[in-house]
Length: 182
Image 1 (cartoon, rainbow, N blue to C red):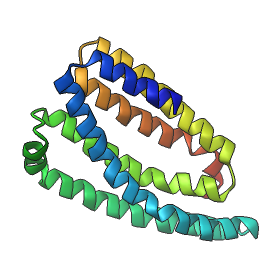
Image 2 (image 1 turned 135 degrees about the vertical axis):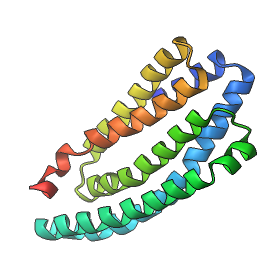
Image 3 (image 1 turned 180 degrees about the vertical axis):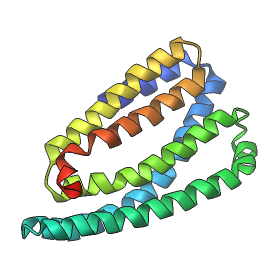
Image 4 (image 1 turned 90 degrees about the horizontal axis):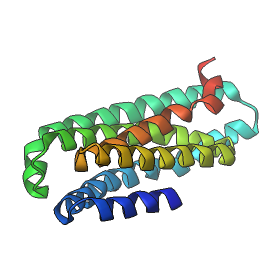
């Protein structure tokens, strides 16, 4: 939370008022679907946790693949709907930079598929590792956000930092779950 606070503090002090307003809108646009995606976490934790507790790793693998397939299809549908609605979203939020909206769309997709790993880390009781993943993502978001904004990318850089931090967090979350792919 400290690194996320520093990210927002830096952006609020560095970006113009208009650019920070765009960033705030973009972050809200990312947050809403991510809250919906996280609604599945308790369900996954319940079933995967019981399989972990019983040592039924084959059931964990099967459940992971089933949920991953379902979420990936759902995320792809959301991705395509977002692409189809891009002109309307652009007009509604008054965002003239289409690149920012494409980054938002990719970010939402990664958040949806990342929910699976978050839920399985919780079910495995790998809380320390989950905290590690969150810290890596938050630190990376801050560092990349500072670098990209100083390079002159403004809101695009701030949003790209969010996307890259979530993507790296997703990739870093795999090592404790590698047994699923054995």
